[in-house]
Image (cartoon, rainbow, N blue to C red; front, side, top):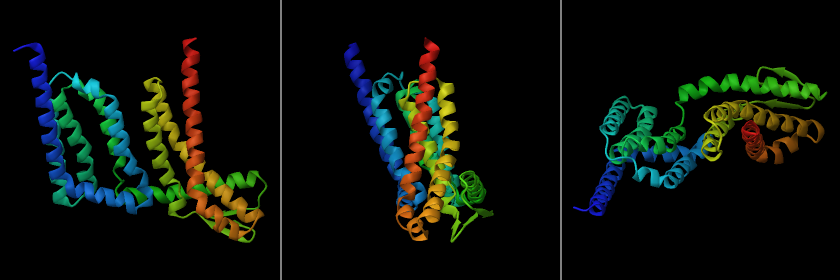
Length: 285
């Protein structure tokens, strides 16, 4: 058999195994994927989750050449897939959605390594592990974090308003201004923007050509960036109520508040990424 024929045979076998893997995942994970998509659509905290598989698929497509040169099938991938199947069974038995959903990216990664080889983990590992960010946090953890975030957001906003000489009094998560009371509810805690900014920062690490250390710094910076962006939203809302009136703060500003947080966070995140890239360029000089 010639080398070309052998190569075509391996490619055909890889395609057959890939089709079988897709069929297996579709069969095993259909209820998990359905519930996941429903939560993305219904829960405003996780609307960004629907974009993550698209981004992951795009990154994998860009690295398809590296996948094809992965070195052939590897047993480690099968072991990872079996471990993921164990998580799926355990999660199903315990009716625990988080465990079932987390097993999905691990199953895909395991099958990719098994079909395309151990070297495929280097090129496919990052984009596939990105899928973990599409999995909503368990509600017990979400609500455990939410209230401290509400208090932090209220405290920071009150500090900024006080520095601007705006009369404000804080009681827990409530900001009291002349003629207006602003309650920092769970939806305004900043946790939603934190999850979005964290996801964006991780995506940026695939886009920006910077060192691993700088990538880690960028991801960590996404957390204070999200808090700062949410503080901007609360301060603008309070200022609108103070200078224009409560109807303005509860009307146009309330409708645009989500976009304000996202744009403020995105601009700050892009600035951080630009600075990190600039420091890398300066280091080379």
